[in-house]
Length: 131
Picture (tube, rainbow, N blue to C red):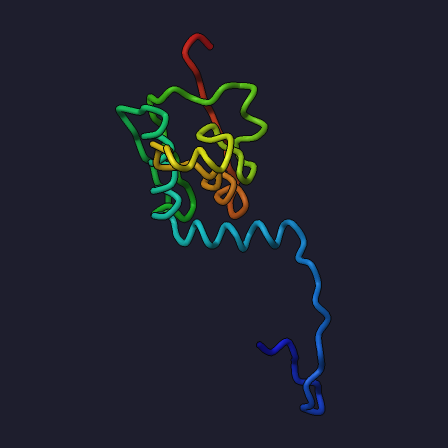
């Protein structure tokens, strides 16, 4: 593994190792999850299914490059959970590593909305029964 760059004279120059800032880390991680609009749609559809949706409507602008809007009739997100909805590793699906043995949902890591929110503007509109 080489960690050097050529100087003006052509000799390699050692570069200091630095810790990446959170914004850079999150955008790199988002790129690992969301490769293109179809990846984002897949992740969001899995969230819809996990929420018990029976009907899903998808609206795209410029093939998903300008707008992806997904509406469903799932159970919604509780108001008190909204501050965490776009945070990394925030999930309603598990509480501990051991829970992975019995996971019965598509999404469980809490990465989809977090990743999407690091590479786009996200608006969440939700309603729950009785709200």
